[in-house]
Amino acid sequence: MAKFIFIAVFMVVLIANFASSEVAASSVVVVGSSNPKEEGNKLAMVQEEEDMDGGFSSLDGMLQWAIGHSDPGVLKERSEVAQRMSPEELNKRQTELKELMEKLKIPSDAQLMLIAVNDLNNSSLPLEHHLRALEELLVLVEHIDNAIDLQKLGGFSILVRILNHSEPEIRIAAAWVLGKASQNNPIVQKQVLELGALTVLMKMMKSHTTEEAVKALFAISALIRNNMNGRSLFYQEAGDTMLQEVLSNSNLDIRLHKKSLFLIADLAESQLENENTAEVSFFSNRLLLKAIVDSMASSDLDLTEKALYATKNLLLLRSTDVQLFKDFCKLNEVLERTRQQLNDLSEEYAMDVESLRKEVNLTFLQKLNEVTQSAL
Ligand SMILES: *[C@@H]1O[C@H](CO)[C@@H](O)[C@H](O)[C@H]1NC(C)=O
Ligand SMILES: *[C@@H]1O[C@H](CO)[C@@H](O)[C@H](O)[C@H]1NC(C)=O
Ligand SMILES: *[C@@H]1O[C@H](CO)[C@@H](O)[C@H](O)[C@H]1NC(C)=O
Ligand SMILES: *[C@@H]1O[C@H](CO)[C@@H](O)[C@H](O)[C@H]1NC(C)=O
Image (cartoon, rainbow, N blue to C red; front, side, top):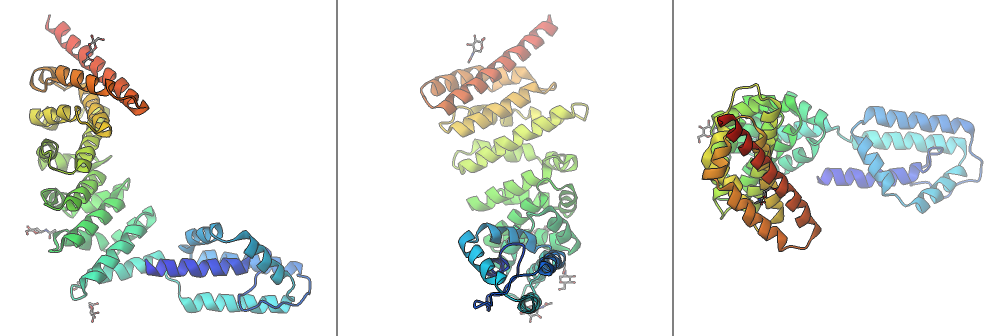
Protein backbone atom coordinates (compact mmCIF):
# COMPACT_ATOMS: atom_id res chain seq x y z
CA MET A 1 0.00 0.00 0.00
CA ALA A 2 2.75 2.40 0.95
CA LYS A 3 4.15 1.88 -2.50
CA PHE A 4 0.88 2.92 -4.10
CA ILE A 5 0.61 6.02 -2.01
CA PHE A 6 4.13 6.96 -2.87
CA ILE A 7 3.50 6.49 -6.55
CA ALA A 8 0.22 8.36 -6.39
CA VAL A 9 1.82 11.32 -4.65
CA PHE A 10 4.60 11.27 -7.17
CA MET A 11 2.08 11.28 -9.96
CA VAL A 12 0.36 14.37 -8.57
CA VAL A 13 3.65 16.20 -8.77
CA LEU A 14 4.20 14.82 -12.22
CA ILE A 15 0.77 15.83 -13.46
CA ALA A 16 1.09 19.29 -12.02
CA ASN A 17 4.19 19.58 -14.13
CA PHE A 18 2.69 18.16 -17.24
CA ALA A 19 -0.10 20.67 -16.79
CA SER A 20 -2.39 20.94 -19.79
CA SER A 21 -2.05 18.48 -22.61
CA GLU A 22 -0.09 21.02 -24.58
CA VAL A 23 3.10 21.46 -22.65
CA ALA A 24 5.50 19.62 -20.44
CA ALA A 25 7.73 21.00 -17.76
CA SER A 26 9.62 19.62 -14.83
CA SER A 27 9.41 20.75 -11.28
CA VAL A 28 13.06 21.67 -11.43
CA VAL A 29 12.20 24.41 -13.91
CA VAL A 30 10.45 27.32 -12.36
CA VAL A 31 12.21 30.28 -13.87
CA GLY A 32 11.34 30.10 -17.52
CA SER A 33 12.23 32.27 -20.46
CA SER A 34 9.46 34.04 -22.27
CA ASN A 35 9.79 32.31 -25.63
CA PRO A 36 6.48 31.28 -27.14
CA LYS A 37 5.85 27.60 -27.38
CA GLU A 38 5.93 25.89 -30.73
CA GLU A 39 3.43 23.64 -32.41
CA GLY A 40 5.90 20.75 -32.50
CA ASN A 41 5.86 20.47 -28.74
CA LYS A 42 2.24 19.50 -28.79
CA LEU A 43 3.15 16.43 -30.79
CA ALA A 44 6.06 15.66 -28.53
CA MET A 45 3.77 15.86 -25.54
CA VAL A 46 1.18 13.56 -27.07
CA GLN A 47 3.98 11.14 -27.87
CA GLU A 48 5.22 11.28 -24.30
CA GLU A 49 1.76 10.53 -22.96
CA GLU A 50 1.39 7.57 -25.26
CA ASP A 51 4.71 6.18 -24.11
CA MET A 52 3.60 6.47 -20.55
CA ASP A 53 0.33 4.70 -21.15
CA GLY A 54 1.96 1.99 -23.19
CA GLY A 55 4.77 1.34 -20.78
CA PHE A 56 2.83 1.58 -17.57
CA SER A 57 -0.70 0.49 -18.21
CA SER A 58 -1.44 0.06 -14.52
CA LEU A 59 -0.65 3.70 -13.92
CA ASP A 60 -3.69 4.73 -15.87
CA GLY A 61 -6.02 4.69 -12.90
CA MET A 62 -3.48 6.50 -10.81
CA LEU A 63 -3.10 9.19 -13.46
CA GLN A 64 -6.84 9.75 -13.46
CA TRP A 65 -6.76 9.94 -9.72
CA ALA A 66 -3.86 12.37 -9.74
CA ILE A 67 -5.61 14.61 -12.24
CA GLY A 68 -8.73 14.58 -10.12
CA HIS A 69 -6.78 15.59 -7.04
CA SER A 70 -4.68 18.31 -8.60
CA ASP A 71 -5.34 21.97 -7.91
CA PRO A 72 -6.46 23.57 -11.19
CA GLY A 73 -4.87 26.85 -10.13
CA VAL A 74 -1.51 25.21 -9.70
CA LEU A 75 -1.89 23.40 -13.00
CA LYS A 76 -2.60 26.65 -14.80
CA GLU A 77 0.32 28.41 -13.19
CA ARG A 78 2.68 25.61 -14.11
CA SER A 79 1.42 25.51 -17.65
CA GLU A 80 2.00 29.24 -17.97
CA VAL A 81 5.54 28.79 -16.74
CA ALA A 82 5.99 26.03 -19.26
CA GLN A 83 4.63 28.15 -22.05
CA ARG A 84 7.45 30.58 -21.52
CA MET A 85 10.08 27.90 -22.07
CA SER A 86 12.05 27.52 -25.26
CA PRO A 87 11.57 24.39 -27.36
CA GLU A 88 15.09 23.26 -26.39
CA GLU A 89 14.30 23.59 -22.71
CA LEU A 90 11.04 21.77 -23.14
CA ASN A 91 12.74 18.91 -24.92
CA LYS A 92 15.33 18.70 -22.19
CA ARG A 93 12.64 18.58 -19.52
CA GLN A 94 10.78 15.87 -21.35
CA THR A 95 13.90 13.75 -21.53
CA GLU A 96 14.52 14.29 -17.84
CA LEU A 97 11.01 13.24 -16.99
CA LYS A 98 11.31 10.10 -19.05
CA GLU A 99 14.56 9.20 -17.33
CA LEU A 100 12.99 9.82 -13.96
CA MET A 101 10.12 7.45 -14.72
CA GLU A 102 12.53 4.76 -15.83
CA LYS A 103 14.78 5.25 -12.83
CA LEU A 104 11.83 4.88 -10.47
CA LYS A 105 11.06 1.52 -12.05
CA ILE A 106 7.37 1.89 -11.30
CA PRO A 107 6.21 -1.73 -11.18
CA SER A 108 3.25 -3.13 -13.02
CA ASP A 109 0.38 -4.85 -11.20
CA ALA A 110 1.70 -8.22 -12.36
CA GLN A 111 5.08 -7.49 -10.81
CA LEU A 112 3.46 -6.37 -7.56
CA MET A 113 1.44 -9.59 -7.46
CA LEU A 114 4.49 -11.70 -8.11
CA ILE A 115 6.27 -10.07 -5.16
CA ALA A 116 3.22 -10.62 -2.95
CA VAL A 117 2.89 -14.26 -4.02
CA ASN A 118 6.57 -14.94 -3.39
CA ASP A 119 6.35 -13.34 0.03
CA LEU A 120 3.28 -15.39 0.92
CA ASN A 121 5.02 -18.55 -0.23
CA ASN A 122 8.05 -17.87 1.97
CA SER A 123 7.26 -19.19 5.41
CA SER A 124 10.50 -17.85 6.86
CA LEU A 125 9.26 -14.28 6.47
CA PRO A 126 7.60 -12.64 9.49
CA LEU A 127 3.84 -12.41 9.83
CA GLU A 128 3.72 -8.70 8.95
CA HIS A 129 5.18 -9.46 5.54
CA HIS A 130 2.44 -11.95 4.88
CA LEU A 131 -0.25 -9.55 6.02
CA ARG A 132 1.15 -6.78 3.87
CA ALA A 133 1.25 -9.11 0.87
CA LEU A 134 -2.39 -10.03 1.48
CA GLU A 135 -3.40 -6.38 1.78
CA GLU A 136 -1.78 -5.62 -1.56
CA LEU A 137 -3.49 -8.57 -3.21
CA LEU A 138 -6.81 -7.45 -1.80
CA VAL A 139 -6.54 -4.19 -3.71
CA LEU A 140 -5.04 -5.71 -6.85
CA VAL A 141 -7.58 -8.49 -7.39
CA GLU A 142 -10.40 -5.99 -7.68
CA HIS A 143 -9.48 -5.79 -11.33
CA ILE A 144 -10.71 -8.87 -13.12
CA ASP A 145 -7.56 -9.04 -15.28
CA ASN A 146 -5.36 -9.05 -12.21
CA ALA A 147 -7.42 -11.80 -10.62
CA ILE A 148 -6.85 -13.93 -13.72
CA ASP A 149 -3.12 -13.09 -13.73
CA LEU A 150 -2.92 -14.12 -10.10
CA GLN A 151 -4.14 -17.54 -11.15
CA LYS A 152 -1.30 -17.78 -13.67
CA LEU A 153 1.18 -16.89 -10.94
CA GLY A 154 -0.06 -19.80 -8.83
CA GLY A 155 -1.39 -17.37 -6.25
CA PHE A 156 -4.62 -19.20 -5.52
CA SER A 157 -3.04 -22.46 -4.42
CA ILE A 158 -1.03 -20.50 -1.88
CA LEU A 159 -4.07 -18.55 -0.73
CA VAL A 160 -6.09 -21.74 -0.28
CA ARG A 161 -3.19 -23.35 1.57
CA ILE A 162 -2.95 -20.50 4.05
CA LEU A 163 -6.67 -20.72 4.83
CA ASN A 164 -5.23 -23.32 7.20
CA HIS A 165 -2.73 -20.90 8.73
CA SER A 166 -2.35 -20.93 12.51
CA GLU A 167 -2.87 -17.15 12.74
CA PRO A 168 -6.51 -16.04 12.45
CA GLU A 169 -5.51 -12.71 10.90
CA ILE A 170 -3.88 -14.51 8.00
CA ARG A 171 -6.83 -16.84 7.51
CA ILE A 172 -9.24 -13.90 7.55
CA ALA A 173 -7.23 -11.92 5.00
CA ALA A 174 -6.78 -14.96 2.76
CA ALA A 175 -10.53 -15.65 2.76
CA TRP A 176 -11.17 -12.02 1.96
CA VAL A 177 -8.79 -12.00 -1.00
CA LEU A 178 -10.24 -15.28 -2.30
CA GLY A 179 -13.75 -13.85 -2.03
CA LYS A 180 -12.87 -10.60 -3.77
CA ALA A 181 -11.09 -12.41 -6.58
CA SER A 182 -13.94 -14.91 -7.09
CA GLN A 183 -16.77 -12.39 -7.24
CA ASN A 184 -18.37 -12.53 -10.68
CA ASN A 185 -15.30 -14.28 -12.06
CA PRO A 186 -16.09 -17.79 -13.33
CA ILE A 187 -12.44 -18.57 -14.16
CA VAL A 188 -11.27 -17.82 -10.65
CA GLN A 189 -14.32 -19.49 -9.09
CA LYS A 190 -13.54 -22.68 -10.98
CA GLN A 191 -9.93 -22.81 -9.91
CA VAL A 192 -10.55 -21.90 -6.30
CA LEU A 193 -13.30 -24.53 -6.09
CA GLU A 194 -11.01 -27.15 -7.62
CA LEU A 195 -8.40 -26.35 -5.00
CA GLY A 196 -10.88 -27.43 -2.36
CA ALA A 197 -11.38 -24.00 -0.78
CA LEU A 198 -15.09 -24.47 -0.13
CA THR A 199 -14.62 -27.23 2.45
CA VAL A 200 -12.00 -25.23 4.33
CA LEU A 201 -14.12 -22.06 4.25
CA MET A 202 -17.12 -23.95 5.57
CA LYS A 203 -15.01 -25.17 8.47
CA MET A 204 -13.95 -21.59 9.12
CA MET A 205 -17.60 -20.74 9.70
CA LYS A 206 -17.32 -22.52 13.04
CA SER A 207 -14.66 -20.08 14.19
CA HIS A 208 -15.17 -18.22 17.43
CA THR A 209 -13.79 -15.10 15.80
CA THR A 210 -16.70 -13.21 14.28
CA GLU A 211 -14.54 -11.62 11.61
CA GLU A 212 -13.29 -15.01 10.47
CA ALA A 213 -16.81 -16.35 10.04
CA VAL A 214 -17.92 -13.15 8.28
CA LYS A 215 -15.08 -13.29 5.77
CA ALA A 216 -15.50 -17.04 5.28
CA LEU A 217 -19.19 -16.55 4.48
CA PHE A 218 -18.31 -13.71 2.15
CA ALA A 219 -15.90 -15.99 0.29
CA ILE A 220 -18.37 -18.91 0.21
CA SER A 221 -21.04 -16.65 -1.32
CA ALA A 222 -18.59 -15.29 -3.88
CA LEU A 223 -17.61 -18.83 -4.88
CA ILE A 224 -21.09 -20.23 -5.36
CA ARG A 225 -23.10 -17.28 -6.67
CA ASN A 226 -23.84 -17.69 -10.37
CA ASN A 227 -21.85 -20.90 -10.30
CA MET A 228 -23.68 -24.17 -10.68
CA ASN A 229 -20.73 -26.38 -9.71
CA GLY A 230 -20.15 -24.25 -6.67
CA ARG A 231 -23.77 -24.59 -5.62
CA SER A 232 -23.73 -28.38 -6.08
CA LEU A 233 -20.63 -28.65 -3.95
CA PHE A 234 -22.18 -26.44 -1.31
CA TYR A 235 -25.29 -28.62 -1.17
CA GLN A 236 -23.17 -31.78 -1.02
CA GLU A 237 -21.22 -30.35 1.90
CA ALA A 238 -24.44 -29.75 3.84
CA GLY A 239 -24.59 -26.02 3.26
CA ASP A 240 -28.20 -26.11 4.45
CA THR A 241 -27.15 -27.25 7.91
CA MET A 242 -24.41 -24.64 8.00
CA LEU A 243 -26.83 -21.80 7.22
CA GLN A 244 -29.48 -23.17 9.55
CA GLU A 245 -26.98 -23.23 12.41
CA VAL A 246 -26.03 -19.64 11.74
CA LEU A 247 -29.64 -18.45 11.60
CA SER A 248 -30.66 -20.39 14.70
CA ASN A 249 -27.83 -18.99 16.79
CA SER A 250 -28.93 -15.62 18.10
CA ASN A 251 -25.54 -15.04 19.70
CA LEU A 252 -23.91 -14.66 16.34
CA ASP A 253 -23.18 -11.31 14.76
CA ILE A 254 -26.17 -9.96 12.83
CA ARG A 255 -24.00 -9.55 9.73
CA LEU A 256 -23.78 -13.34 9.56
CA HIS A 257 -27.57 -13.61 9.71
CA LYS A 258 -27.99 -11.02 6.97
CA LYS A 259 -25.39 -12.57 4.70
CA SER A 260 -26.96 -16.01 5.18
CA LEU A 261 -30.44 -14.81 4.29
CA PHE A 262 -29.12 -12.95 1.30
CA LEU A 263 -27.34 -16.08 0.11
CA ILE A 264 -30.45 -18.23 0.59
CA ALA A 265 -32.57 -15.78 -1.42
CA ASP A 266 -29.96 -15.89 -4.13
CA LEU A 267 -29.73 -19.69 -4.15
CA ALA A 268 -33.50 -19.97 -4.37
CA GLU A 269 -33.50 -17.54 -7.26
CA SER A 270 -30.90 -19.60 -9.10
CA GLN A 271 -32.97 -22.70 -8.50
CA LEU A 272 -35.98 -20.85 -9.84
CA GLU A 273 -34.11 -20.09 -13.04
CA ASN A 274 -33.14 -23.75 -13.45
CA GLU A 275 -36.23 -25.53 -12.22
CA ASN A 276 -35.46 -28.45 -14.50
CA THR A 277 -32.29 -29.35 -12.65
CA ALA A 278 -32.54 -31.96 -9.96
CA GLU A 279 -34.47 -30.94 -6.89
CA VAL A 280 -32.25 -30.26 -3.97
CA SER A 281 -33.04 -31.30 -0.45
CA PHE A 282 -31.52 -28.00 0.58
CA PHE A 283 -34.84 -26.23 0.10
CA SER A 284 -36.82 -28.78 2.05
CA ASN A 285 -34.69 -28.73 5.20
CA ARG A 286 -37.48 -27.84 7.58
CA LEU A 287 -35.21 -26.54 10.31
CA LEU A 288 -33.63 -24.18 7.83
CA LEU A 289 -37.02 -23.01 6.58
CA LYS A 290 -38.17 -22.38 10.12
CA ALA A 291 -35.01 -20.43 10.93
CA ILE A 292 -35.60 -18.24 7.87
CA VAL A 293 -39.22 -17.56 8.76
CA ASP A 294 -38.36 -16.84 12.38
CA SER A 295 -35.81 -14.23 11.28
CA MET A 296 -38.69 -12.13 9.94
CA ALA A 297 -39.81 -11.00 13.34
CA SER A 298 -36.44 -9.40 14.05
CA SER A 299 -36.25 -5.86 15.36
CA ASP A 300 -33.74 -5.11 12.63
CA LEU A 301 -35.66 -3.94 9.56
CA ASP A 302 -32.93 -4.92 7.16
CA LEU A 303 -32.93 -8.44 8.53
CA THR A 304 -36.73 -8.58 8.31
CA GLU A 305 -36.57 -7.51 4.69
CA LYS A 306 -33.94 -10.11 3.82
CA ALA A 307 -35.93 -12.87 5.54
CA LEU A 308 -39.09 -11.86 3.68
CA TYR A 309 -37.24 -11.79 0.40
CA ALA A 310 -35.74 -15.25 0.97
CA THR A 311 -39.14 -16.62 1.97
CA LYS A 312 -40.76 -15.15 -1.11
CA ASN A 313 -38.21 -16.76 -3.43
CA LEU A 314 -38.61 -20.10 -1.67
CA LEU A 315 -42.40 -19.96 -1.97
CA LEU A 316 -42.05 -19.35 -5.69
CA LEU A 317 -40.20 -22.64 -6.17
CA ARG A 318 -42.42 -25.31 -7.64
CA SER A 319 -40.95 -27.96 -5.38
CA THR A 320 -41.60 -26.08 -2.17
CA ASP A 321 -43.91 -27.80 0.27
CA VAL A 322 -46.18 -24.96 1.31
CA GLN A 323 -47.76 -27.09 4.00
CA LEU A 324 -44.40 -27.12 5.74
CA PHE A 325 -44.44 -23.32 5.81
CA LYS A 326 -47.94 -23.34 7.21
CA ASP A 327 -47.74 -26.08 9.82
CA PHE A 328 -44.11 -26.36 10.79
CA CYS A 329 -42.88 -22.79 10.29
CA LYS A 330 -46.17 -21.18 11.34
CA LEU A 331 -45.70 -18.65 8.57
CA ASN A 332 -49.16 -17.18 9.10
CA GLU A 333 -48.49 -16.31 12.70
CA VAL A 334 -45.03 -14.92 12.02
CA LEU A 335 -46.40 -12.77 9.20
CA GLU A 336 -49.05 -11.42 11.53
CA ARG A 337 -46.48 -10.66 14.23
CA THR A 338 -44.27 -8.96 11.67
CA ARG A 339 -47.23 -6.90 10.47
CA GLN A 340 -47.85 -5.57 13.97
CA GLN A 341 -44.18 -4.79 14.44
CA LEU A 342 -43.97 -2.90 11.18
CA ASN A 343 -47.14 -0.95 11.91
CA ASP A 344 -45.52 0.45 15.04
CA LEU A 345 -42.80 2.04 12.94
CA SER A 346 -43.36 5.29 11.08
CA GLU A 347 -40.31 5.40 8.84
CA GLU A 348 -40.65 5.06 5.12
CA TYR A 349 -38.42 2.00 5.02
CA ALA A 350 -40.87 0.16 7.28
CA MET A 351 -43.59 0.86 4.73
CA ASP A 352 -41.47 -0.64 1.97
CA VAL A 353 -40.85 -3.72 4.05
CA GLU A 354 -44.58 -3.92 4.81
CA SER A 355 -45.40 -4.05 1.11
CA LEU A 356 -42.92 -6.87 0.69
CA ARG A 357 -44.55 -8.61 3.66
CA LYS A 358 -47.96 -8.30 1.97
CA GLU A 359 -46.46 -9.77 -1.18
CA VAL A 360 -45.15 -12.75 0.78
CA ASN A 361 -48.57 -13.21 2.37
CA LEU A 362 -50.23 -13.23 -1.04
CA THR A 363 -47.70 -15.62 -2.56
CA PHE A 364 -48.19 -17.89 0.42
CA LEU A 365 -52.00 -17.83 0.16
CA GLN A 366 -51.90 -18.44 -3.57
CA LYS A 367 -49.66 -21.43 -3.18
CA LEU A 368 -51.84 -22.83 -0.40
CA ASN A 369 -54.82 -22.33 -2.63
CA GLU A 370 -53.18 -24.18 -5.53
CA VAL A 371 -52.43 -27.14 -3.31
CA THR A 372 -55.99 -27.25 -1.96
CA GLN A 373 -57.39 -26.99 -5.48
CA SER A 374 -55.32 -29.83 -6.82
CA ALA A 375 -56.20 -31.96 -3.82
CA LEU A 376 -59.89 -31.64 -4.59
C1 LIG B 1 12.61 -16.22 2.08
O1 LIG B 1 12.88 -15.06 2.84
C2 LIG B 1 14.16 -15.06 3.40
C3 LIG B 1 14.25 -13.84 4.31
O2 LIG B 1 14.02 -12.67 3.61
C4 LIG B 1 15.20 -15.05 2.29
O3 LIG B 1 16.48 -15.06 2.84
C5 LIG B 1 14.99 -16.27 1.40
O4 LIG B 1 15.83 -16.19 0.28
C6 LIG B 1 13.54 -16.32 0.92
N1 LIG B 1 13.33 -17.59 0.24
C7 LIG B 1 12.88 -17.65 -1.01
C8 LIG B 1 12.68 -19.03 -1.56
O5 LIG B 1 12.63 -16.66 -1.67
C1 LIG C 1 6.42 -21.91 -3.43
O1 LIG C 1 7.66 -22.34 -2.97
C2 LIG C 1 7.98 -23.66 -3.32
C3 LIG C 1 9.35 -23.99 -2.74
O2 LIG C 1 9.40 -23.62 -1.41
C4 LIG C 1 8.01 -23.82 -4.81
O3 LIG C 1 8.23 -25.17 -5.16
C5 LIG C 1 6.68 -23.37 -5.40
O4 LIG C 1 6.73 -23.39 -6.79
C6 LIG C 1 6.36 -21.98 -4.94
N1 LIG C 1 5.05 -21.63 -5.42
C7 LIG C 1 4.79 -20.49 -6.05
C8 LIG C 1 3.43 -20.31 -6.55
O5 LIG C 1 5.63 -19.64 -6.22
C1 LIG D 1 -6.01 -28.04 6.24
O1 LIG D 1 -5.80 -28.79 7.42
C2 LIG D 1 -6.57 -29.96 7.50
C3 LIG D 1 -6.30 -30.64 8.83
O2 LIG D 1 -5.81 -29.75 9.75
C4 LIG D 1 -6.24 -30.89 6.36
O3 LIG D 1 -7.04 -32.04 6.42
C5 LIG D 1 -6.48 -30.19 5.06
O4 LIG D 1 -6.06 -31.00 4.00
C6 LIG D 1 -5.72 -28.88 5.01
N1 LIG D 1 -6.14 -28.20 3.82
C7 LIG D 1 -5.30 -27.58 3.04
C8 LIG D 1 -5.88 -26.90 1.86
O5 LIG D 1 -4.12 -27.52 3.26
C1 LIG E 1 -52.92 -12.15 4.19
O1 LIG E 1 -53.81 -11.73 3.15
C2 LIG E 1 -55.17 -12.04 3.38
C3 LIG E 1 -55.95 -11.71 2.13
O2 LIG E 1 -55.69 -10.40 1.71
C4 LIG E 1 -55.65 -11.32 4.61
O3 LIG E 1 -56.98 -11.64 4.87
C5 LIG E 1 -54.78 -11.69 5.79
O4 LIG E 1 -55.13 -10.94 6.92
C6 LIG E 1 -53.31 -11.46 5.48
N1 LIG E 1 -52.53 -12.00 6.57
C7 LIG E 1 -51.45 -11.39 7.03
C8 LIG E 1 -50.75 -12.01 8.17
O5 LIG E 1 -51.05 -10.34 6.58
